[in-house]
Length: 201
Image 1 (cartoon, rainbow, N blue to C red):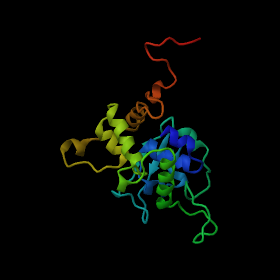
Image 2: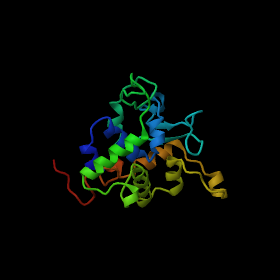
Image 3: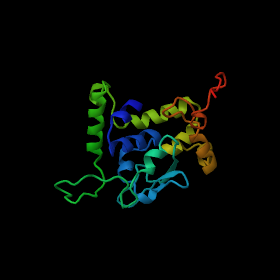
C-alpha cells in the first residue's frame, strides 16, 4: 500500500488512502459529502441518505487514523461532494461524484505498474481488496471483531451479544490508535523507539 500511495497522483492518492485506512466501500467513498468529514472530532461519517443509501441502509462513523489525517487536511471544503470527478461529456462543468468504475480501473493500472496482480478474474487484487486488507490488519493485531464490524458497517448476527453490544466513541478512537497502518506499529507508538531500542539523543 505504501508503494501504491507513493506512485499514485492526486486526487487518487487520497481516495486510495481513505479506502485503505477506513475499510469503507468504494460506493461509500463516492457519496461522501464535505460535511461528513469531521477533522476536529476525528471522524469520517458514512451516512445512508435517500438515493445514496449504504449497502446495509445504516449510517456509521469511523475514527480517522493518524496516518490518514494529513491526506484529509488538504481536501477542499466546498461541496457538496468530498471527491468530485473532472469535467466529462455528461457533466461538462465537473463537480459530480466520482465513478467507482474509473476508480477501480485506475487502481488496477497502478497495481500492474507496481507488478502486483490485478483483477479478480485472474486472482489478483481490486479496489475492494483495500477493504479486505483493512479488516485483516485490524483482526490480526487483536482489534475485537465487533469493533471492526462496526467500522466496516457489517450487519451483526442475531445473538444477544450482538444485540447488546455498543461501541463508545472513546473506545472506538482508542482501538483505531492500535491499528498499525503504514508503519507496522500501533499509531499510538509510531515514531517511538521500541522497548529494546535505545533512543538516539
